Length: 607
Image (tube, rainbow, N blue to C red; front, side, top):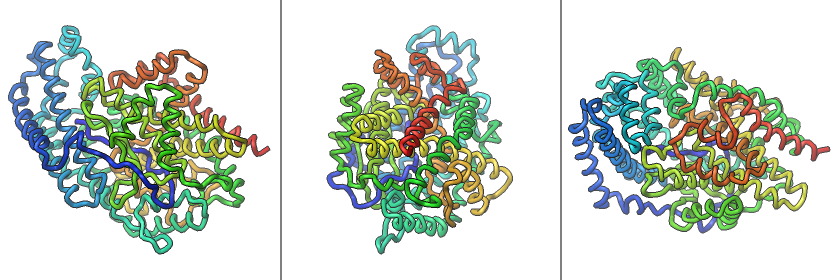
């Protein structure tokens, strides 16, 4: 059931200031027209009946099915995933438009409760599939090509075999989930969306307040940073409780499953080897001095400061244009960049703007940040933004639209194979950003404009690579420490600060209160260890873009083939046509060298 939301890294503070006019809103009617739509009632009734029927027809019998019967079983399971995914996509998107609305929250909870109940009888499917002997399984796949197409799904499923619990325990965990992690996730979302901050006599939500951290006026940046610290500090016990509970719940389940590390589940879900992630992490940490440390020292000089404070980290440069980018300008910029790369890419992106597939405005209670949600393969993705008209917002549009294009292309694989591991899901989004950046850079009128664009891109890459690996290290420390006992807010604050100076470098100073800024990052709550996927995607895209710049005449065709593959191929298969291999430790150095090269150019401009 595809109900996850691909979320953009929340650390990438976007714009500040007044709302932009004429922003699009979602039209969710392609899913359902209302919460009491007859089609929704019909689908819920079908799900209840079909889940029970599926269990009656197949439970205890999977190892006796021939290849044709097994294919029928898999197709029925896929249809259940599709209908359940459609319902939960609608409920989730409606909720994220206004998380503080009690009726929307109740509707999503009720849908989740019902579907969890309906699908409890299906827990046997994975358990029994994993008990089928390898030889018999291979024989089944060899006897039917249509069934063999699902091998990547089975491979990911069967990778969990060593960590599988008894049927009874798996059913208990499935039933219990609605009052476990998902309930704590909702508490976090509603708390974050309900926070209020006082800025210059105005009461603002978290998104608008975070956006002041990239304001030109330094006093406004400082005021926002201190107000964020004040409000986070007032709520820190609740956020610590959320993290303590989720980390402990994960520790208990991991222990029962005999998972060797807290990260194992994420690596399995991403279909990526732990040593590949470790190579990425080590390469980035080793590069901190030549990336973030060096860049922030440059920025300190540009801003004419003795020390950069945390509220200066995402400050615009003094010569930067601070005018608001209209929605139409943003659309034209991204669409031209996509179209220059491939008219097909622009054609796929066009309906997002014209058919109500984007919700862009900043509204009270709306989920902060940005995401692209694929919904189900027979509908289309939806994109959420909080657009306030700064250049970084244009890059966020390019990023999320990249996800959307990827999701549209992968839909041809069908419900079970379209879902892309997080590590690869970030590829198309970061590539969309790179295309947009290169388009803007090629149009720079002079060195000053080029410098601003380069500096902005370097900052985004540092936020995508350096910051996200630092976040990953924080999570690793948090989950390890929680195994030894309850963590106080001060304990968690100390873990957060232990990665900050190391990753950002000596040019930055940290105000009192910054130690609480872990509290608002949703990835730590919703998707433990998700964050390394951003660095993975950025490094992969930098390597891909180098191949593109070298002039491979078939690059576009290979690129679209990669996106169309969805989750049907391992990263080694997907990258082989480009001559790339992410399992080679040197692979990551290539991507990091691109960032370092941009900083070289910025330093040369100082001479």
